[in-house]
Image (tube, rainbow, N blue to C red; front, side, top):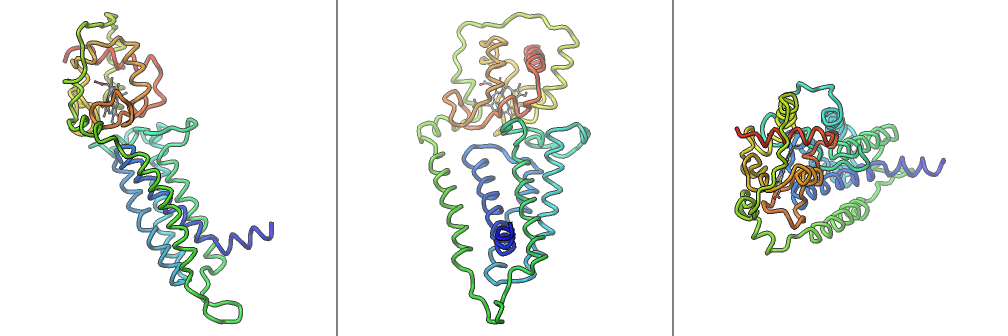
Length: 304
Ligand code: HEC
């Protein structure tokens, strides 16, 4: 226990450095390789996180005792933003929030590992680690500039560059593994390619006639969860989502097929992906029930 605490006191800022680099590379991996679109709140968190990768590294290299004071304002603000973002995703506490009225919705959950780990949750964890480690460094007067005898310590080039190089190497491997097949990439040029590509010889609509209450519920849920990418009228939004209402794909699919497609979403690597844009699983709303999604489908089947 004693040993662990001594080790932690000495290395807390290296742990903070590691967390900041993993957070930055991870967020770039999600947006640049996986194609997940960052929302407005994501950008605020990036603004607060990315500078820390440089600030912590330089502070450590210069053995600047004040380093935690430079880091904490960013990491604590970031902790606030990601906590707010996570609550927005997972609770109704801020249901009336006007954040992300434009572009991709802040409540779209691109990932939902184990039912609770979303991207803001990962950011929250990183900001929390960085804040805690900075407080530990602050209490222990780290980084130290002189040793016990009062001699100046050497510049820690090796550990600082070691952390950065290891994180970069891991993520470069992920970036290369995620590189798209050039042929697939070419086929995905047009965001509205779906229309031209999807064959729909026989029209297979379920023909269920929905009651007005279902349609109203479907409309509400559609506007909350899908409209940011697929347009208020279901006609699509350039570079975010394609046409749904009245599309051949919609007409040619049964409700059950559409439900399965929506539940699964479409990663860039999905052979069915035609636009080169990502559809998050369940439209980024893992909390929607099958009935909810069927109501959205019923609503989209009504002509506008
Ligand atoms: C973050 C943006 C985004 C959100 C939110 C979103 N979608 Fe999508 N959706 C897409 C993209 C992009 C595609 C096209 C993917 C592709 O190339 O196949 C798509 C494809 C689809 C398709 C297949 C259409 C076709 O022609 O291939 C259906 C159905 C669909 N979405 C329904 C929904 C529903 C219902 C919701 C709300 C619950 C929703 N989407 C939310 C981005 C989104």
